Image 1 (cartoon, rainbow, N blue to C red):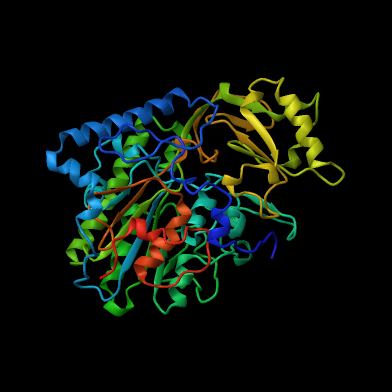
Image 2: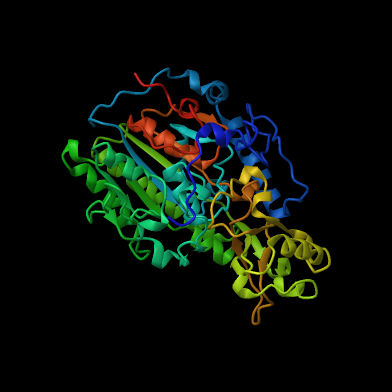
Length: 486
């Protein structure tokens, strides 16, 4: 299998970083009653003003909201883990059920841009990552969605970007051509784990779900081929229909995917009214799901886990870095470039030393316009916290781009462009998304510190009371998030 490396045990993964390395990079610390510790890692790069404003606005909004609560509510939020000692018993379902929902590109803080009464209801009566969910690197759609359902970093599950080259297969993965081909997808995703234990699972769109693996064969009724034109309402109703099945046949895992607000974020950036409208629409879909579950009398029995895969940051033409500008030092051919925009990946042809290419690029970047905002590494020299080395699919040279900047081959013609992007180093607060859990195993009103999305796999398997596959999640992490079972 091209580029495959053995999955490290959680203990070996943790040994690469300080214990709290995934719990906060650019956290704000102004929340009333917050117990967060200051971040241990800092960066010399100044956070763009708009991201700073969003972070401050988020903090102030939460502080004002907390101040408006009755006095006893402050203690409720701070000590919510003491409200319930054990999970709530199921009343109608025979087995725990998890609905895992992804709102693509839902940046942490979007929930404060407009009224979101249904998301607010889940937060008030559930458990929330107080300052967002941390993506894996690169903070792109396919790698993060597959990390969420495997508990693996991209170097180990194989989907190292939305598009990549495998030198052993001598083939290139693209979303249209590789989504349903199992040779690209390593690890054991949640739906495979579930069917391996004799239960039904369903996927209403999720990267990797249409690739048959093991006992998971993507049966038509339980596995939907992605079609972005399918109305969101139809997707929600499709999930609700599973609850009309006999109790013993209801899928214990259901995934549900919405491509918004990522679609709008790329076009207009994170601060446009279109984002506000998209967030409101996602909230209405959560409301539709809640009402459908209540109508069937199972809302309090079902575990809803609402997440995003990454955040979004504004970009503009004046923040461009052009590889062609490096020509006086080294000519970077376009066919060397395997990734660009928010992350650079370069695979020099035979006869070129990657170390020599890095040295010449580094020298040139000190001289060209905006060059200081791109730092290139041999992949084995990348910060260990990125876990981005153990695969042949990863380009030998990786460039980390400063937040909001974009690297591309040459100067474009035509109109100037401003929009939004993601894929950056996951240390940036703007790349964070959301984690909200509601259901019998989630305490009401509980706030937890930010964590990386590779932990979600073990949370779900713990809820479902099944044994998961080896992964990069932290041993025992679910006990920090979930109420103990009866």
